[in-house]
Image 1 (cartoon, rainbow, N blue to C red):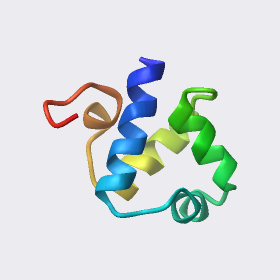
Image 2 (image 1 turned 30 degrees about the vertical axis):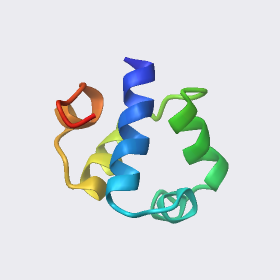
Image 3 (image 1 turned 180 degrees about the vertical axis):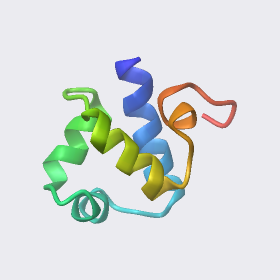
Image 4 (image 1 turned 60 degrees about the vertical axis):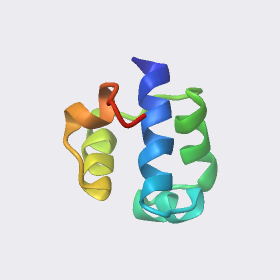
Length: 70
């Protein structure tokens, strides 16, 4: 799941037309945090996963599960 979550975070960020810096600002974090999420070096906690789903306007299932689109 870790790798798919990382891929999905990047996919939905790019689909939203956001930079890593912009997403980091929405999460009150640093760009390196988003970079680590997208590379699979770290896993966001449950609270952050919920925030990401809200930011991307997707369900939790769409964020953590593979989709046909990606």
